[in-house]
Length: 376
Image (tube, rainbow, N blue to C red; front, side, top):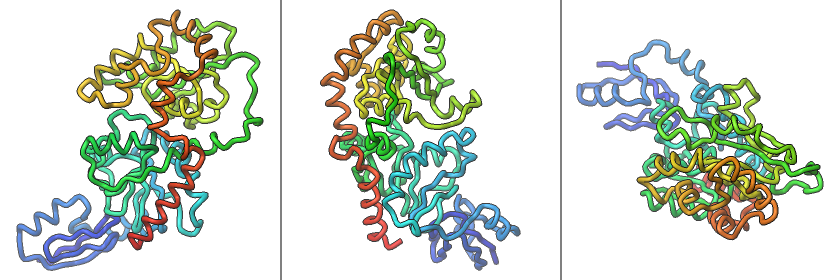
């Protein structure tokens, strides 16, 4: 039986004696129904389709750059909510790599790919599977059980901000190679000329929640519940709000990640997402609206007490408010005392001081070394 086959993924697929090269169309003779069924069931292969050349052109299947920074098909996300976040993480790395060797792509291409979503999510959403030269580089720094070994098992390589993540991944069963590089998104903020930061005439409070949830334990985010308390914040303080990019999309706002807002803030109100870690890295005290978030956050992660957000709420790391009245009282305390030793020690393991401001350069060196080792 003659069969026409296109390998639609970015790495070779080998089934029995047959080898299918990435993005190439081949015709083979198959004499075994068992092998034919195995070929037909492989997600990476298009079998007996007549429009393969049009498919290749339509989906941009081609040889990639030496190092590709992958959006993973923008239609995967709500609008383009994660595109700017991916670029905020990638640009500090790309500035330290040879320009001729790098580029952004919607999908993973041949050679090496930096991908920003765990393999569990990629597989659940039916996106292009993780290949042997793909690198996991999370799109955020929140735990959310996103970095667990079972969620990234398909990756052979993972880049993490600090030793706490390496320990977390090993303890949850990850077997791949781990590179500790820092958190690249914050390089521009850490290295900024401090004199260029806008001076506040009165203390500035930033509410920076993670995206909302429609599922059980939706109080893991303070959005939208905390919005009804905003008018209770005294006029003695300047108030700013920076929603998660997906929440901004639903409000028809430009879907930019929270960056400069953190620099200008004196205090950050956060919940269980990346912004709480980013604030601490930048030395900003964080207040948690526990009456909204604590119960649901701890319920959601109660089977995994090593989860970092579970630890923050259970150990009361940072400032934890029992009510809106209590939260307002904490403003002056946080402004006076700043970050306490407990959160300083916690965030040092998440993202150590010696890598801060150097994450992009560190990651670039590690990526080049790996690319040379893999001969991509």
